[in-house]
Image (cartoon, rainbow, N blue to C red; front, side, top):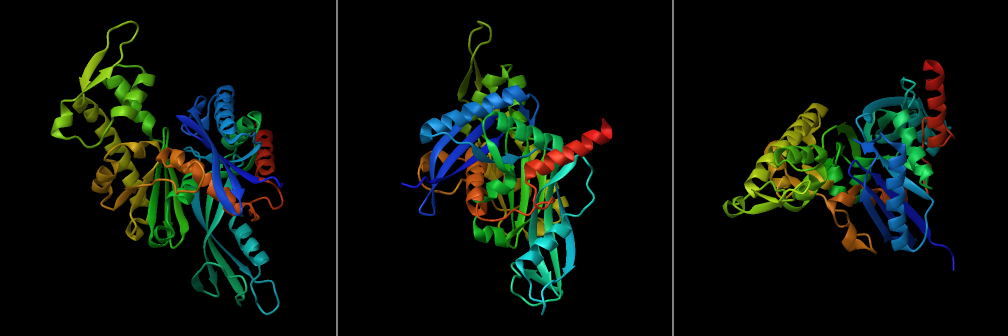
Length: 410
C-alpha cells in the first residue's frame, strides 16, 4: 500500500504552539493529528528563548504525532511579529517569445523583477504574491499565460521579515526535528481556512488577533492587497486582568478564557467569579461586571488602533464583505458586535473550514492559522515557489543574507 502524503502546519504563537497533521487521501485532506501546548520562549511572534521554544514545539509535535499514530519530519510554519512588513511593488518586462505570446517563464521574470528592490542586509523576502497583471496597459488580468502582448507588468505584494528572527524560527523548528518547507505569513495562512472566494473578490479585512500581535491582511479582487502586524493582542488583556484583580498571570489567563465577555446583561452583572488565593490565602470573589470593566476597554483600544491601520491602508472603502476576526481573542463573546461599532463595517468571527477527519477539534478560531497552513501546503505542494534568490531555497537564502549581514557589522 503506497504511503499517503502528509502535510504539517505549525502555528508558533505567543501563548500557544499548535501543530496540525493532515493526510492526503484520494486528493482530499483529512486531519489526523492535533497538538496544542502553552508557548514558552516566544514573545510577539519572535523567539526570545530558543531552548524553551524548542521544548514547546517538541511537546506540541509529540501530542499531534501520538494522535496521528506516526512521526513527522517536515512542516509549513507561520511567521508573524512586528518585524514583518508588507509593501506593494510594480514591475515591467518585454515578453520574450516570438509573436508576443506570454509564457510561464515571463510570469516568473516579471515577479523576479518586482523583487529586485533595495533591502537592508538584515531583511529578506518571505512572499512575493502577484495581485494583478497588466498586458499592454490592460489591467485586472489574473493569468496572462497564453495571451498576446509585447509588454507585461505586474502589481506584486511583497512581504519581508528580519532575517535573524526568521533564522531563529528555522533553528527552533530544526532542533525540534522538523524541516521547514516554507514560512508563511500568518494572516495569509488564516485566510485559506476562514475566508470564502466571494469575500476575497468583494473586499475583506482579516484580523487574526492572537496572544502577542494582531495580524491584518486586506484582500480585494481575489488577491492580498495589504498586510500589517500590530504589536497588540490577548496578552495585554490578560495583563490588565492580572493587575486589576490582583492574581498571577496564569490564573488571569484562565479567568479570561472562562468568564471574559464583551456583552453583559443586567443579570450577569451580579454574577460572581472565584479568584483563587495566592500563597495560602483564601479564595476571593469578584463580580463579573468588574471583569467586564477591565476587558472591554482594552479590546476596544485594540480594535480602535486596528481600525486606524485599516483606514491608513487606503482600502477601507473597498471592504464590501467587511471584517473577519479570528485567533484566540475572537473567542470573546460579543467581539463581533463591538467590532462593528468600531469599524462601521459588517463583522463576523472566522471559524476554520470543515476539512475531514478530526473536524470537531479544529472548528475553533485558535486553529485558523494551523488549518490554513495545511490548506496552503496542499495548494502549493505541486507549485514552484518563486523567490528572491532564484534556485535557492528559503533557508539557504536566509543563511546567505545572514552571513552577508554578519560580515558587514561584525
